Length: 382
Image (cartoon, rainbow, N blue to C red; front, side, top):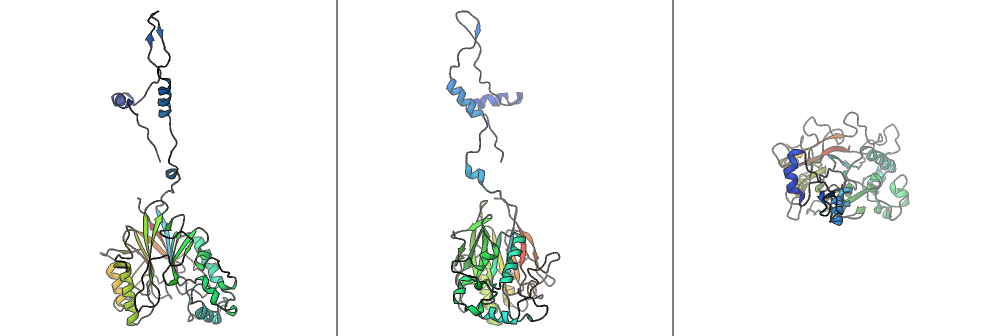
């Protein structure tokens, strides 16, 4: 920051008169006068030594006094946002060669005891390496295991899973994956659906701890499963201002009731979360997650995809940062593109690990059924 010093106090009128002749200056030496007894020129003693010293001090360059301003983080011009469904499923050919250590037996344990959320230790380690490489600022997780559930898992179902070494009070899997310096907050009633923010970038309003179990704002939809699948967080940016983050995990399934639940969930994000305001109710809004429908391929068959497109796309209030359409690279099962990032005001571009050229997969093991989507998002000035 550049600080300009202007001519101060009584000197300002004189400065304005002298400006064309070379700017503002002030000579602190007293005028030459004649001694009344001898008639000789003399410099009398400084009549106002204290005032002159004060003026000299006032004219000297000053350090920035406000330490808060001096220490304020420089506002970034962009940030990295990731949405990652870290879950797995049983029907992925886990026993096919080569042997990656995760076979059908492990898949059965994952399904029975871990809800198919990220819990297999080698996959957790791979996710750690992935996040260290992408250096993210904001993350939306779906299907990530909550470590406190280890308390109810028997010893025989813990080998090679995070519960094998778990102790009460240990960081949950999301914090293990991201490392120090992060906050994680989860949906009410759904500890496998969480958002995270890097503290260098900002912090979740209303959440002071590293982990806030039900730190996101969300409301359950009747007859659409337990807990909440749409969560709102206000991020107070370290450089000033806010971003409203809406983390979405649409209900899975292709039945009519599944589609109708997704319609209601998307309306929570864009119309009314349940508190009279849209989930995306901030000045800068970022909506991301696993929609469980493909807005570019399924709009003619799935009312929930069509409903999402009512809010997002050309001529709509929100736009896609991710690619969408018949030729968009697939983020799920090599077939469809159901993991998306959208905004009303923020621009950017995205890639998919293991799909976009020069971006390798998180792991070569057959474990994750989704690919993470990584977006570089432009951040406007305050």
